[in-house]
Length: 120
Image 1 (cartoon, helix red, strand yellow):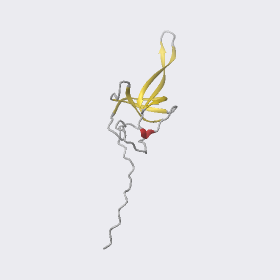
Image 2 (cartoon, rainbow, N blue to C red):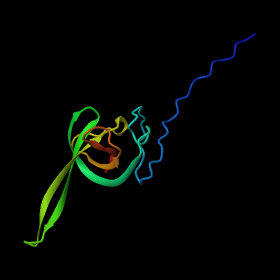
Image 3 (spheres, rainbow, N blue to C red):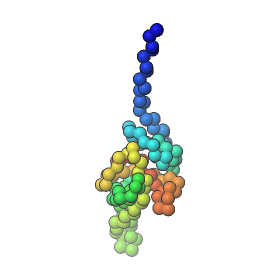
Image 4 (cartoon, rainbow, N blue to C red):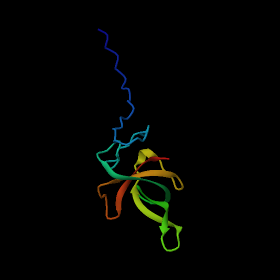
């Protein structure tokens, strides 16, 4: 009797879940539990566009956003900046200088309450 041929296992593309925001899901997968697409982290609240400034921490990046604030006394605008620590999932492959979108999530550590959800 002939033995049946072994079936080859076909790797399926990682299924990214819908996070409820109009952002394209990453094509690569990851096993990060704090990834909003492949893990269990839910996002909520505000979405901010910012620039990655520092990537020296493990899976955490510092992003900076610049905005204008109106000074009533002088009837002029002044530039202000805010820095946020944000979790960076492996599947997004974000580097220093990239323009990214971050979104609020539950606190992941003392300073991290945002997660990067995509590049802009």
